[in-house]
Length: 390
Image (cartoon, rainbow, N blue to C red):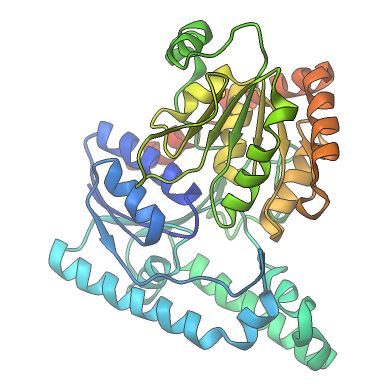
């Protein structure tokens, strides 16, 4: 079969998991090409795949935070870009020939293409916000104060109806989460969309056992085996604000191995910094190696990072972006004893060092992580998705 995978280009999380899905599909004899934009398109190209660039779209932001009310009130430019992307997809299909199947990884142009042309396709997502998205759009900023309650209710219903229409025009909805009672995102505890919804666990990368030993990786990276290793895996919007904060913290991390990745695939791979106990990589092609050697992972709270943390059973200190999905991911994991969190606005050197010390000493967290490691082995999203096409 020939697949088109449409990838949302906001951040690298969608691209990372879609490339892993493509690898699995190709290993089963299928052909795959992509559509995306921005850093995600660069990442896909870096992995050797054909990718068509489409017009980028982005939510309005207020500083580091998505501004849902402005996105709602000024939605015309966003909708215009999505429609331009949809038209570009139609041109791509004309050039490539219609694929046998389309998979939309949270990408609206490809989802709209599936819905409008009744094509065989599925939607891949880690969060289903039916029943909540319209409310989110209206509960922030001026919008909620301006519209009367009955109009708010109507708008909420309209937003939900639109997403339900798009979702229900697909053959299947793959939700990258665990079924109840282990569901991570609270929005995913939903009805089954007339039997179309499948909880398929998380998309994992390499299994820890497939990698070289921890000792070999530490030797390769010239790390001190007598010191704990802290891996700062920072990517996405506003990443350099956090990276600059952590590099200033170096004196507080002197008795530790410190590794930082910036998630910039188009940059040179290595930028040495300070001395042999401190490493900054713009891009490290085998990120799982860094996960394997880490004693604690410090990162945002995107699903790809969470998938790696749970697969490798690693303690983590999460500093979620100030947007609903990451905040909920982080708080859900913390409530289950799987991580510690720091709110970005409360982040300072003292709080960071206190929380990091607590995580390093928390043996109970290690026990809880082993339970979710076994869930990751039980629910293999790549196998569950690709089995539908074999």
